[in-house]
Amino acid sequence: NKNPNWKGGKPKLKGRIRNSRKYRRWRIIIFKRDNWACQRCGKKGNRLCVHHKKSFSYLLKKQPIKNYFLIMKSKELWNVKNGLTLCVKCHKKTKNYLNFVNKK
Image: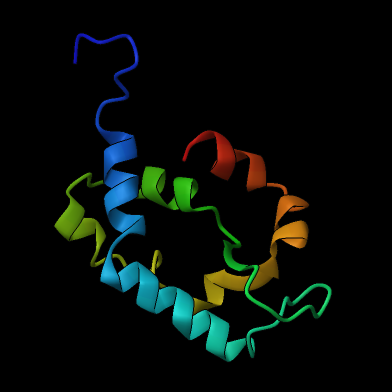
């Protein structure tokens, strides 16, 4: 924690969540629901991602708890209505895309 690059463990927590089975299942549910197609341009293919309408970072900041196991129980974080299938090109056009790239 004395390193100038220390971020209080937050990137580690985000990484654990994004690599979790629950996160991968959440993405698959949204891909299936959206028929594996970008919901903006209609493109189908393997260059798709799931976009959080309410950003992932915002939802984590909003959580009063910072414990991985308790965050994994958050209903809002795993709400499929908050996810949207987008191709990479359309995802880059979203307002919270830069937050995603800069906080990865």
